[in-house]
Length: 260
Image (tube, rainbow, N blue to C red; front, side, top):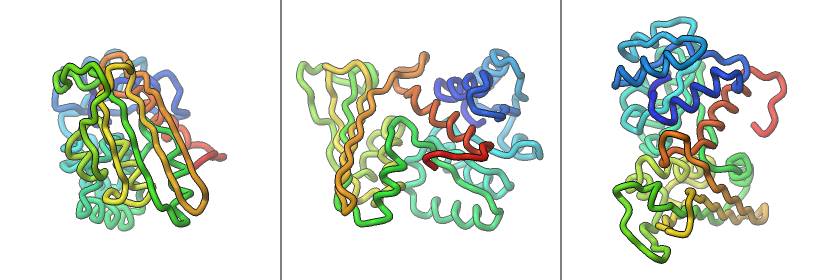
């Protein structure tokens, strides 16, 4: 695993508790070595703390690398991971809206016979969006209500809901590189970043980040709402995102897969 912050720690503890099927964490890496060593000590099955991603990729027993760090980490390591013959799970999905990077990853994955896997993250219904997009989809809108707590120092004091951003998913991910990876996930599952509309609302009436997705197409209409509990250590990270990774890892080893 690359990244031992709040989200990485939540994922690691789910895996360590057996909630990701037969998956085992064999190695962890973080630029902050202290975080990596602290996480390794907290797990019952002690993973190796590697000094670099190159060291991790030299381990033949590693089948899947989970990125739980940042868009910058995806840009720096993703190609190297896939080219080494490992499957890659990407959480910082906003990085994949870089068309050239995505193209290179697709080519490497084909060449090596591996997969780039994107979990559903902090929303539900990604399977429905993907299915709908096989047909004609006319509109996808993501409305995200963020509490002042989830924005931290970026938040201003408001008494009424205030629209912070309205535009396409490509611009939304640039404006909120850590908090709107869901916009990128929806875009990749659906009609693309430039056609996916996003509205971000600073809302003092909500305690949790709330994502609402509206989809219209020839299939009919789809409405999805997720009100997310944060990870224990960081109000900006969704616990559902960690659970979605555990679910994805579990499905990789299952004979019967539902909702893939």
